[in-house]
Length: 159
Image (cartoon, rainbow, N blue to C red; front, side):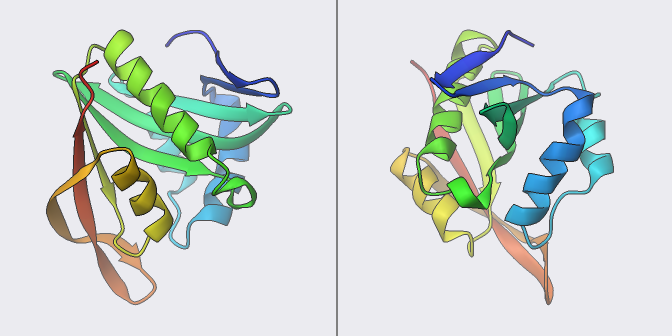
């Protein structure tokens, strides 16, 4: 992974370390009704083509990003900002940094992701950033009652 990237005077996007997982799990559990579990996060840190970053604001983890890069394609696996900071541009900033990393460091030219149709905030962010819906994965996400589909979205990130 690369060195830390400053995102604002008081904030930094830096590579996630194993010791960050507990703090990341706090944000994950606050942000999602069906969160990833700790084992999944720890396993992501072991996979060669997966990359994990944390957003630190005033030395506190307030967001994170898991992505994979294979064969010129970036896949955003999990992008999350603490609920108290959502709607303030932090998710957009992380997304822009991911595009920069994808093209400059990982040499990717496409970005893919899945999002819940019910996650209107995330969908609005992705659509405003030029993502287009290219498909649907039936019963992809666990939900309070059964399963929820996932919208598959894509964007060209060729500079």
